[in-house]
Amino acid sequence: MTTSTGMTDKHGAHEAQHGPLSYRLLLGIWLGLMALTATTITATRIDLGFLNVVAAMGIASAKAGLVIFFFMHLKYENRLIKGMALTAFVILAIAIGLTFVDVGYRY
Image (cartoon, rainbow, N blue to C red; front, side, top):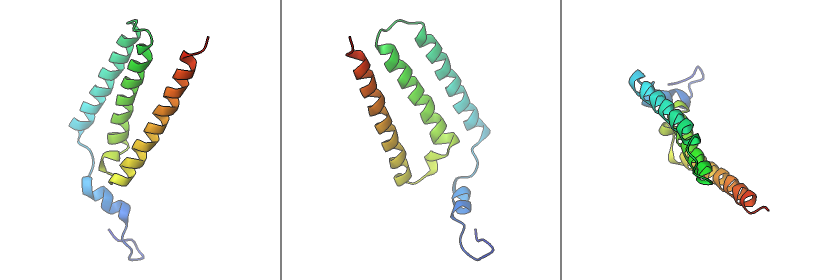
């Protein structure tokens, strides 16, 4: 796609590469998010001790992954962008993990 200045519009070409998501896929993702939400609610009613936090974080990570990959179109980005997003999540997971370790060892 070219702009009025004759330059190539990378965003327009990127959009043309993968096109819009189908309603069937979006419905499947929505149903997955609803199932994970029901799993979160069910997990809160089961006493797993410290593993409640681990279960909640795992389910929340799965839901965030669905939203980021499909609704924010990370699935269609190049490897550099995917790597940057993964790095950000790893750093966030380390920070949250160290916070829980600190809280766990308090008297």
